Amino acid sequence: MDVLLNGLVDAVRLLLTGDQDSWSITALTLRVSLTATVIALLIGVPLGATIALARFPGRRVALAAANTGMGMPPVVVGLFVTVLLWRSGPIGSLGLLYTPTAMVIAQAAIATPIVIALVAAALQQVDPDFRAQMQALGATPVRAFAALLAEARLPLLAAAMAAFGAVVSEVGAAQMVGGNLAGQTRVLTTAAVLATSRGQFSLAIAFGLILLLIAFCVNLSLTLIQQRQTSPR
Amino acid sequence: MSTGIGCRNLRVYANRRQLLEVPDLHVASGRTLAVLGPNGAGKSTLLRALGHLSTHRVTGEILLDARPATRAEMREAVVAVLQRPIMRRGTVAANVTTGLRFRGLSRREAETRARPWIEALGLDALADRDARSLSIGEAQRVSITRALAVGPRVLLLDEPFSGLDNTTRADLLADLRAALTGQPTATILVTHDRHEALALAEDTALLIDGRIRQHGPTTEVLDNPGDVDTARLLGYTNLLPPALTGGPNTLVARPEHTQLVRDETDEAGLVPGTLRRTVALGIATRVDVDTSSGPLTCLHPGDLLATELPPVGSDVHVRIRETRSLTARS
Image 1 (tube, rainbow over the protein chains, first blue to last red):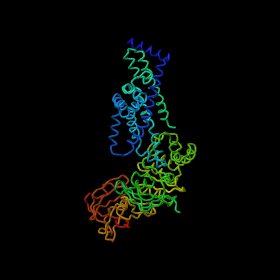
Image 2: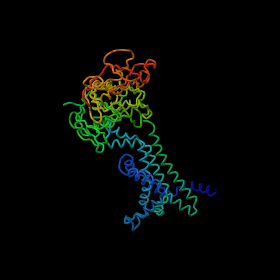
Image 3: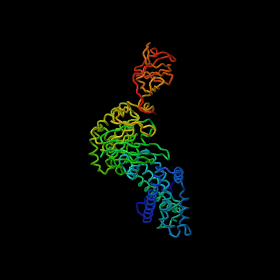
Image 4: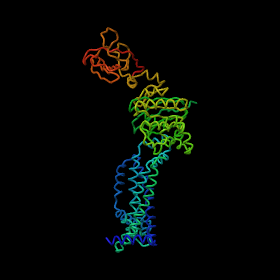
């Protein structure tokens, strides 16, 4: 119990004194996970919308695949991305393994199925005639689709939150494709794992707290946006 | 040049099956056409095809002001109200501006343009309410107001009154009629209710199995069924073949014009039959009679006590006060 208490006290002290390494690790964590989330949204929203709205053979299989992908272990994703980026792998010549870019790729691969599945579910909740009614009022197909996204913005924001939460907290893929190189690819989760394995519990707890704080702040801002738009204008 | 909306050689297909074929149809600006048909006749299919809203394959021409119209022109000119009112998130007032906003108006301009319509359709009290908290009747009123606020050249109404209770429906019908009067809007109302056609439309087309069987002034069309199908659609459900009447043509009659003769009489022209059942409907009593050439339904006003009617299985006579001769062979 003392270990935990002392760890917490040290962690808070560490946070307040503003250790340079901790800040750079935090900044990299944010950069990697937010970039991965944005990429996952850019890929996942159109795909999720297609699955929700278009009629094509294999639509249900695609939805089932996305739902399965939501539960994909990060280690498995990390393994595939590692193989892909390995020196002798299909795109090994790019030299991306053990770089933040590799971590973004892996985390985007983790987050994309989450976004696809949640976006498809969000859009399927809206009345199937919604776009038709918007077009019947004079909207172009693109405008009607934008109106649909606006209509489903609450669950869409929830999809973004879920995607960010999943990637910022994962450790397996970040470790495998990033390599946890100090000053280069060390993020909060891999740093916490390393500190724990070295017995530096205060440091590990400090990283854990920062991680929690980041997750809370990002989700708080998204929740505030979400709830502000719930009340009628 | 005649203004309004129309179509030429319009055909709609689901896969290879033809759902609808309308060789020629035109509704002039300022007039309302009711398209009356039973469920599954292709009414909504016709409406959506005319509005370029169909998800099916459509061939032929949609005409705006007597010339083929592009999708962009139609988008600008046409507004459709679908059967179920679909509201966006936000207030009633914001919803009413939707069509105007799609046409590029600023929020302020749209609100200014929408305001008189909100007042005309009696939505003032609801203007600040969350549109998704409305009853179905209120939502349909908003949906119609939202369409009218655009000031469309063409208004397409897809059974907007179905699902509303009688009072709400009557009020909304009256308000819509008042709102359309004097507007240069060509309106097409799709419905299965002839009373709605009578209340709103100068002209009526009867659509059965994807084809228009009759088309003309509403009062004429509603009172002169051309064939058995249109007769049934218009409430002339009693069929009187030549064998029964002795005349040259099949006649049809409404149940409310067909009544059981309860006194002894030697009146000519009565139809003999056997009483099959009686059903008390509250404000009327329905009596079903089997004749040598098929069943007849009689509708008597009021709740006839069972004692006033002969027992089931009795030989009875039926008097038919008013008949129509079918104007075309089905």
